[in-house]
Length: 124
Image (tube, rainbow, N blue to C red; front, side):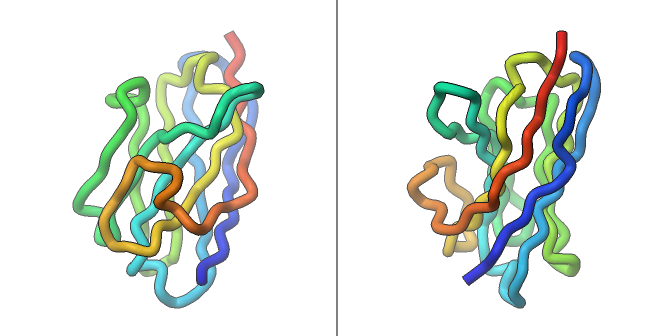
């Protein structure tokens, strides 16, 4: 089992940047594929980015390609999401999630463990 705690959210102007972090407990972080999802008010939780256990494979939803970068530091049990050129439509609660597999997935149902979320608000 793994416990996840996100941090790094906040209020930023359009065009700005934020770096989200997700600290994982436990000693088997490197055996999990990880993902970031977001949920805007009134909408379903949606996929943002995912990364394989080693970090060698990544995948992004089309709307964030070229702006967001997912990465991980297995030695520090930490997942990151670097968000650049933020847009008002990126406003949402961002969640990190762990999948009990080494291989990434964009499907929300494939992730068994979730953090509590961190709010990202982008003003125009």
